[in-house]
Image: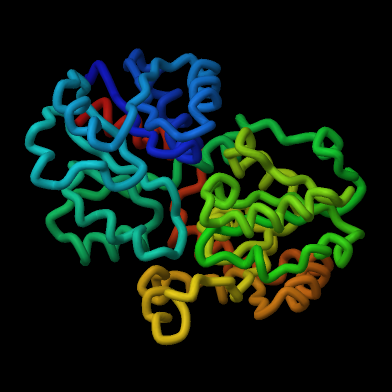
Length: 358
């Protein structure tokens, strides 16, 4: 049995994927340590979360130090949520084995491309993705574990939020708007959008980058404009985990985000915003770049969600879905099995068991 496992935290929003696994390992007597890459304005929050969970941690100042740190480590395993900040040839300097638990399960091409890096094992979500990865990378090692991030919902260890603590009306239905940062639908909704849905609560949970990266400042300005409305709660940096908001929402509104697959797993209706505000160098003659960024898996959104081609249509579909929430239930359940995998609340146990027995 290994004595030490490191979790590489490039970004704050990787933590919901790691923590359920680290909790199981800690109970088994394994030393778990989180390597926190520094992020402007977020280091104190990262430290607070890890200390509350009772794990050890250390900060790493920049990408260049990553290889040096891990080559000197006595860890048995290092778990990553994305491609490491060192190249495949440099892996030989590290004695620990490397595992990948990708931070998201969305329709972007990086979901598959990241396995170009020779991890010793990758934990995969669902038979469909397992088969495709094995075909693309026959020399890599994959384990179909399911998506550990969702465990707290399915094993009922995640406590629901009280909507009143968010300043929302518990008697109204709740819409969870969870857009990604690029390509994003945020700027396609008008500044007065909440007025059009005054009879529902709106929880706005933007991608972390929409709130923190200067290049997406127009997205931040738009969501902050919405937050002035009484029926809107805008999630902040401390609300980095989507799960508590999923539990109290009747419907999800999203775009090219893994949040759609996540919400489908709890079998509630989804409106897919198939319209984006994109940068000039990803449009017109350069639209091939956007197609390259998005994987064909996004076509599955057609089957498990209601597709909107503009903001007005999205509003109309929200109303319809609230009336008939189970319309696409069979599709959601089927695609969840294929793309999310087993939803028995024990994905973390399977990952922890592999790390402690291999």
